[in-house]
Image (tube, rainbow, N blue to C red; front, top):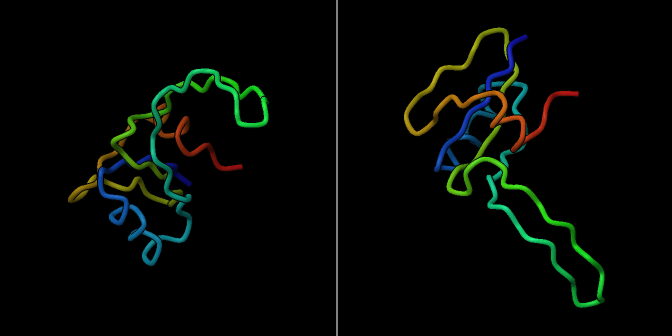
Length: 89
């Protein structure tokens, strides 16, 4: 099986893969870095590193073939995609 990480500014384009492909991870949006903070109860919220590009949504497709880029969907580097959506367990 081949894992292909995909990204798009159009969330619906990635979610639209589900009816056609069996193994599609949940779509996740990239995020900007967040500084350490404190919530209303005084709990410290640890800083979070940036993950991917906040303007893009990410998913991973596991199939017997590499999924090509199409329409609004781009293939992204495995490191970028795995940071955003994780890896298959």
